[in-house]
Length: 405
Image 1: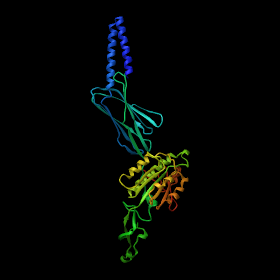
Image 2: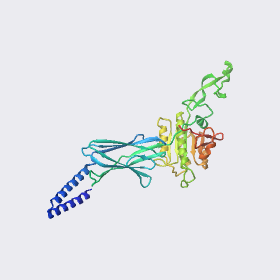
Image 3: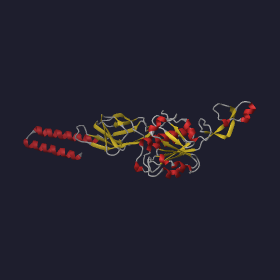
Image 4: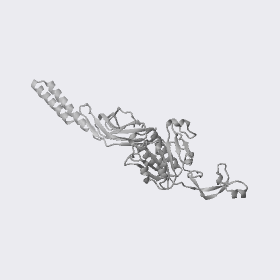
């Protein structure tokens, strides 16, 4: 900007000298007037970004796939000098779909650019809101911002980099799970109760009148004979143990052979949906995957059932990238010994995982293999429109589905 000012000064000095030589008062006056305007423009532009602050945020920093949020931008000009032709730039990850602004464009790599133009009068605060519609699950970043102004006559520009940055975490879609699925997966032959996944058949609490929903082995025949009517035992609840949800992101033996992105997204939803259901039933849930997390290699959430456990698992699923360096079996040492294990995969040839993990400590091991979309039309009563999953384990294969909220 200083170089441009020097050039203008040389031009107007030359005009002034030439005007004096030819005796042109008009030329001299015009040159001096133009020089004054250029100097004022330079000073104006020099202070235009002073006491100018910007705040950005998302209305919701964590949302589920398919939901929307808002990008909020606030500009404050805390000085007597107005600001003209101010442009705000931000880079953001492709797929975030930031709607609004003067223009959006595409940059090299996995980035898009957003910018909008503003004019602020003295001591003005201005707020703008833009819709954000992420295309899919993931972590989206917005940053590398810049403020740029061209002054009041557009001869000079002033730029300033911004340190502001935001992250938007998009969880996978979550569906309610039929209790039958939980019963088939992890029931140990007992009846589920509200708030607790099982009742303890050893810790009897008393008897009550028989109900049609009672199991035959629940009937207390001695007490029934004494009262001349059927009586059923009731038991104290018994909290279930731990469940490890294991997500194998492989679609083939080697990572360079490609992935089935659509099926993997279903797998993310499946893992999150089951985790929520298990936690609601009082089960401690852990999570393990061979996908690439935000930092390091292999994603891991230790088992737990505290209020923030579901958020930790969903956040891990949001950050997870479909890149793997090692087979999921090589992460088995991170699992909690004695926990039940549920393996989710889109890779049918990975059935050896069931046998591998079943030998790692106590607890049952199940494997869910996601089916192809065209197989779902013939699915049974637990079908989710558009896709299905087959449960390989227990007594034969079982089909189940999720129902959208």
